[in-house]
Image 1 (cartoon, rainbow, N blue to C red):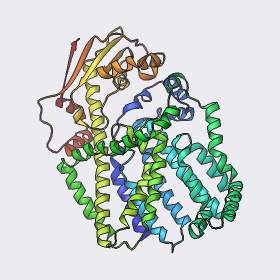
Image 2 (image 1 turned 180 degrees about the vertical axis):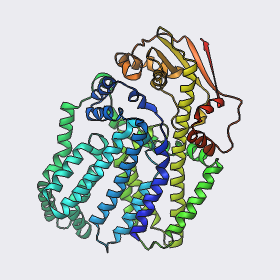
Image 3 (image 1 turned 60 degrees about the vertical axis):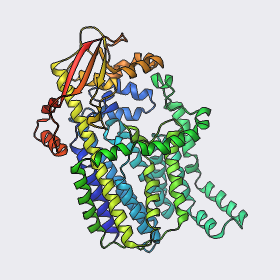
Image 4 (image 1 turned 60 degrees about the horizontal axis):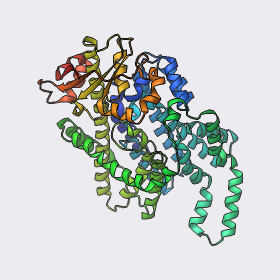
Length: 527
């Protein structure tokens, strides 16, 4: 049974993410990496305190077709994570354990949850890398707990330390630290309670002294980070990821904002997906295929309602590092990078709810429908990013024939009335437009920017902080000047295809994506 669940997890993961492997798109903050000088990249990562990732990006950006290589690397890292999670389960649970099959189903759900789609951006590779390293660290921690080998202890500590480069893992580290290192004490307390408090306290103290290095690891990292990796330059000026008393006071309000925003940003994406005949057909096919694969799997698993709390706690520890710095794991834009850690808790919560149901048939149908929805949504998101790539190509083609740059600095407002073309990967930030211009020109003296962004960045002094580092944003020769003209983007009168998924991918695979500019029209005029 475990083998069938494993192969299903790998199969559905590949279906969910394979379109990423042919998407050569450059998105969002990727434009601070792509076609950027080594100095521009390294200065950026010195500033945000992640210099090791700066060296990584400098190396990877020198590869031919860098976006495709990043996407392949992301794909492989996620496969390694899923494989390692299964290895952890096999190591931790005995074959007869009731928890083994439950854990397999949890990994199946985790592998296809439609979270963290920002992974398609090259700038987000460190998130995926550190997640994989964190999971590998847990694997070696489990080996050390069971076999007490010094090498496993050292590897686990080293890998955990590296994963802390993404700060949210420092908080999430509590879960493997308590779950694995204090597993015997937890079992004892669950079975006997706190009747023998002195004995329990003695056990906890002895275990803490035995694993003192794991206890001190987060504190050692924070000292190391404070001394060697503190934010500087514009990141220090903009209080990058700063935590203060106000952050703690605002937590209740932010949690409410998260609980509503998580769903309100998801609904528009689902609505768009289910207005497409192509994705409705995909969903139905997937449900039938998944039901067939689940046909001979034993669903005779029962759980206690008390275990729902574990999933909720893990979700909380996955979101709290982001909410405390006023970042939210929403589905809008690239906010999904903040969903990095909530998949574990959601998978456990889903499986707990599923296996509270008594009927095996009902459980199979619900699981098949859910997996079909998750995979279809993943494919839809990848398709949406592909449309984001097509939008960038349309802009690129326009700028090749109608370059708005002159011999002096300019500010040009952008009015984009075609935002509905895709909900993922739309060109929005000023440095995305300047990055596209830079592909065919070395002037770097023209800022194309949405009017509301221009006004906001002036009023909050953000441009003032960024100006010394404009070379990091493809604007080496730009200085802030009053806007002189406006570029408006509209849909043309050309009817868009009835089956856009088939049509757009066919155009791309046949090398005719440049023809898609016919669906758009551009007008530039003085203010």
